[in-house]
Length: 112
Image 1 (tube, rainbow, N blue to C red):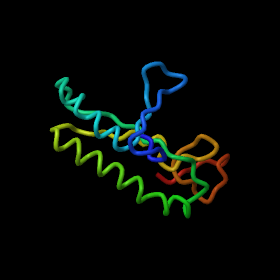
Image 2 (cartoon, rainbow, N blue to C red):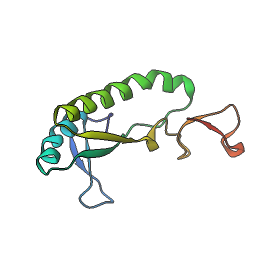
Image 3 (cartoon, helix red, strand yellow):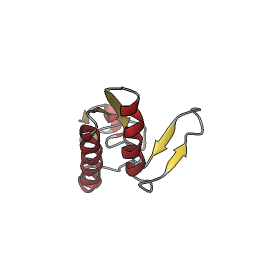
Image 4 (cartoon, rainbow, N blue to C red):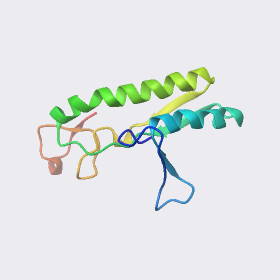
């Protein structure tokens, strides 16, 4: 689910055939197909832009919470469970995820 995209966008992934990035509305609509197959839940990877630090993340938390909350409500209405892959939560330009501690990235340590 790409929270940076138009809500109804469906974009094929260029490197993984059959894999799509969905806006929040498109992801919610796709839940009907999932429920129709008798599948009991979905795993969602949230796509967002990298953040530069804690202050930027503080401003970006609300869109994450809102998007995930919307999808969870839509899924619950269809008796589906949602599991969120946290990989891109506070994604850093270095490819690490999580909010970095006061140490330099090379020194290790993130705040989850």
